[in-house]
Length: 266
Image (cartoon, rainbow, N blue to C red):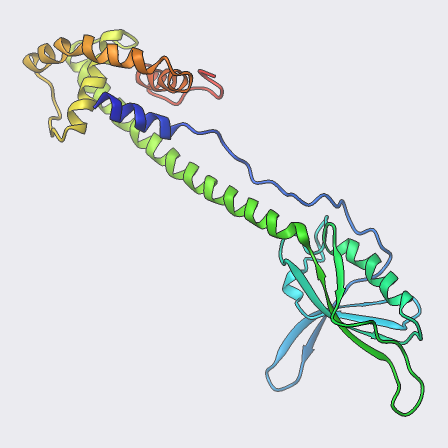
């Protein structure tokens, strides 16, 4: 039973893990304005999209996955929201280079290490009846977002596990203080080895399925007979560094009836 309690203690006291923002951009770097536009067809269909235009108004690009964007972000606009963001683009230049340069510039505001991929060769403006603006489709790929999303999910999982452990720790503290009252009524003094052994024995009995809420003298005689064996097992376990730290924390809870200060036992 001592082994079971020690294993429980090992799972109770894990270090905190704070959620981290992995993107490093400190703000928009281009002078291009990102505009969120709402479209309503008058028949109940409403959508939003992000539009960007170059200074000459010859390039107009639209990102129709607006949920990928947070235009109020102090970092990248696509802050670990989407692995890639699709766009379509109209090119009124007769060459490809202005388009590739423009998209390369604005992609740096969308996500870290962004890569622009067109579905085909960049189409350009053509004169004549069958000409007109070049229509292009593509996406801005965000290679770091996927790994960041995995990290964030893992941090959320750890935070949830930590929350559950905190609840178990709080329940353990309540249990310890309840048993402390029993031991005080019997005559044991706080912050003594006998008090610790009394509490531990009651916990062992409870773990074995005993429903005893009070302890008489005969029960305590039996408890004291087992103390040496219990303490020997504890000392063997305390040879492991992590177990030593956690047993100190557990001991503090038994002695003082409250959580230890931050960093206690480490």
